Image (tube, rainbow, N blue to C red; front, top):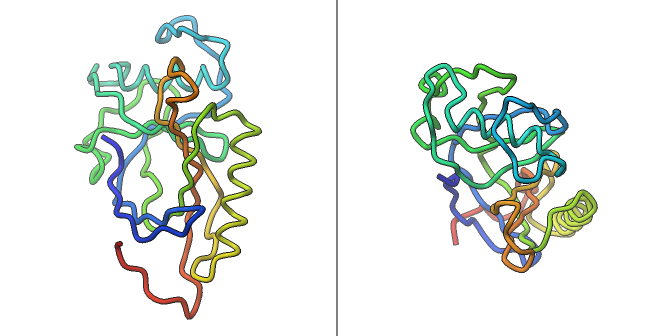
Amino acid sequence: GTPAFEIVEEQGAFQVRRYADFAVVRTARQRAVSDDGVKLGEPKMSGAGAFQALAGYIFGKNKRDEKMAMTTPVFTRAGQMEFVLPEAYWKDLGKAPAPVSNVELTYGEGGLVAAAYYGGYATKDEVERRSAELVEAINASEDYDVAGETYSAAYNDPFTPPWRRRNEVLVAVQQKAGAPPTRPS
């Protein structure tokens, strides 16, 4: 499923969330499309090779031939694409089937995170623009400091029309010294 979080507060331009632990499978975003991988409807789309490798893992290309449900969102951070693993593996990655291809199992970024929602396509320029706006809004806030690199989350398949798409830019945050303690709203 989708990683669990509680809304700590709304800050106008962004929402502050506290994420529980979760696990992901990830790979380099710019990897090539493979002839023997999962067949893709849009093999020339940006990130198609990474999507193919990750989909292959969750659709059974792993040491147990175990098929898993597709989850959301798909995270993109630091040159990596990540699929959220099923909740059964969030506490103990050792229970997840071992990969047979060049994908890696790891834990997602939990803790205090600022997120800003937007619709439409998550193009490179749009993600960069939205990320800069998020960092600017956090820096202008009285309560939070940026505590990491921005990353993005996409919740829809490539065939969802732009007016129905949900995307987010996110970044880890920490409370500024002297700010009132955070509490769920």
